[in-house]
Image (cartoon, rainbow, N blue to C red):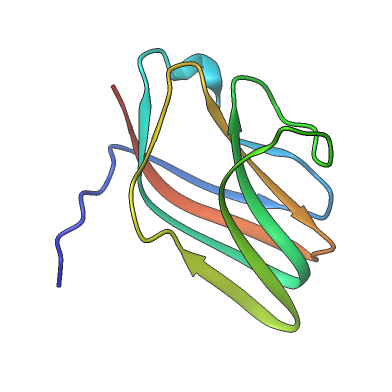
Length: 113
């Protein structure tokens, strides 16, 4: 088993269908950030995305910078784990967005530089 560093900061957020939820505020990311651990889940069909950028994305209008995506299943809760760390540039935030889902969520740890 490989050791994984757990970040100092934690975000446990829930989302609903077609609703953009801020996970990390870009203004708090002054010198860069790194996502250490990340699990996402979705209840229902559709997909859930973790998006990044300097401002809140408007889903469906590009470009959307996708960090991670999990596809749903209409008959069960579906989840996914990001298999690596992701470094974000300074001034970038994170947002959770779910389409056609009853609910979604992200559980993650991260560090700020």
